[in-house]
Length: 226
Image 1 (cartoon, rainbow, N blue to C red):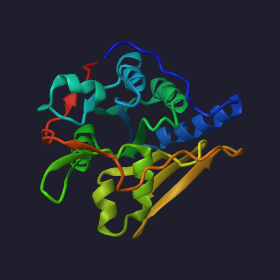
Image 2: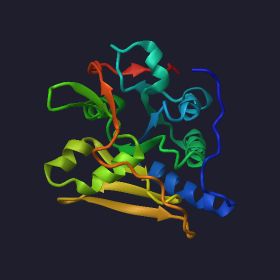
Image 3: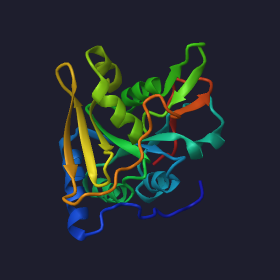
Image 4: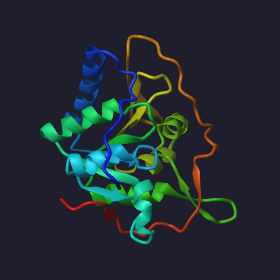
């Protein structure tokens, strides 16, 4: 991946709005035993680059080990967000790239291997003909449409070891922090005081499958050793 800088896309236009959003993200970091990002490198390679090289965080491709290494530049990458100053600095970058549909945050008590195995299982689905396809659940437009529909055992199937998902909302300037409740999924929201135009939504059965592929291996591929 060539070096690149992150580009400002966020609707956070004032210092106070940015500060308020950061506090919401910092709170998520401070309350989590472990905080991860799942970054869509195909949509925002600069954000993935920032995690790897600017902040030195360990990252793992959901493609696993049996995929051509050239696919790394378009892979979804699980990023272990460090605590303290480095973690807050990366969340500042994350806030500056919100509403680009570039990924999600997730809080968990589990180690990276457990989280990776669960996400890799969600990543690969079968169609009615038995062909395996990649499911882009880490696109916020997909996840925020999926989560409210979950009931019963579906909740544990999607959440697994994840305690909370942090997902961009439809309206620019809103974030949802989703967690498993009793029989349904609960959500706390942070939003800007002002109204923003609604972002385009993808239907739950829309073009969020990335074609037919071989299943990833059961081994996470580390993107960078630190």
